Length: 116
Length: 109
Image 1 (cartoon, rainbow over the protein chains, first blue to last red):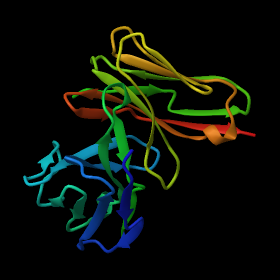
Image 2 (cartoon, chains in turn orange, red):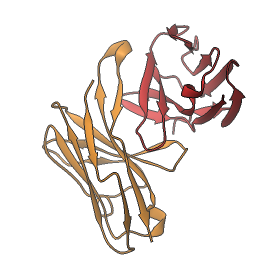
Image 3 (tube, chains in turn blue, orange):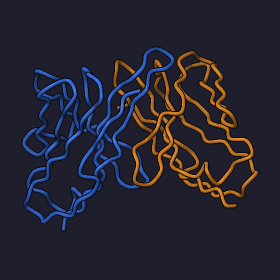
Image 4 (cartoon, chains in turn brown, green):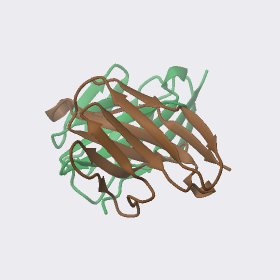
């Protein structure tokens, strides 16, 4: 399965600032996914990043708040813009791997963001 | 919106006990995945089930997909402290995954 390097692993940011999270995959993948997770809780899909086209955002998430870049098939960034304490969460990137009965998602180790 | 409900939400047991975690939905999924997540890490895929009624075993873990592909269960036999973590189910349809609420399992030595 793919190996994903995600950074930073954690950060504490001032409200009103922006943070860019990076994910590097060790293989070429068509789609990369960005999730948000409160500690110990479920994952919520923010958007799907496709190389060469605009990201597709889920309901409740907008490009101005969470701009995404996908410059090539192995790399993506998610920016959390104009942050407020409500943006404090764990942010995870993932890619799909395998197929059929072996299909699943490989995740980065996550970025724990605290906004103060 | 497809919802996946997991139960129980929290489970604390002694080493050696057995347990079952349930994942239920009113929606039909083409496949269902189970993940385990430890603090400070991303979820790690344990298994994918695709056929209604399918049973898969991974050492002491047994996964079952419901006949109607709307629900699933994870059974752990003789739990060990190393099984401690957050267990998440995820239903897949049309290439999109919906994650369950999660079950936090603590196995005490």
